[in-house]
Image: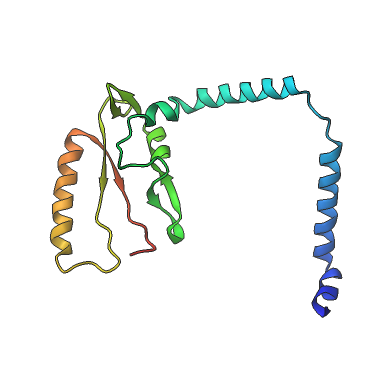
Length: 155
């Protein structure tokens, strides 16, 4: 109980509560839009988003390989948090489907490559990495390649 009495006298707590009160008050006083105006603004917002986004994600993702998910992480940031997903990377590359294959803006077919990720590498990890690097170099000569990075939380 002593903690509750101490917190209620805190000036930051009072400012926060006053701010929340005014926010709720203003939100309740905002004029209500009619349903048709809401629909119209939602449609126009979608149209603007579509123009900005380029090819729609559903079109570029319809020919995604079965073993790759659109929400999979391609690269990671601090504490293993996903920074870039397959879907974002494909949008960045302006990917689209052409004749059942995923291609980039220049028309090069897109391939996906997964490097080996270990918490504790095996004894022959250098040989494995060498083979993977050779295979990746070969793929990059012919295709646009998206390389999946390793989650730093497991390394």
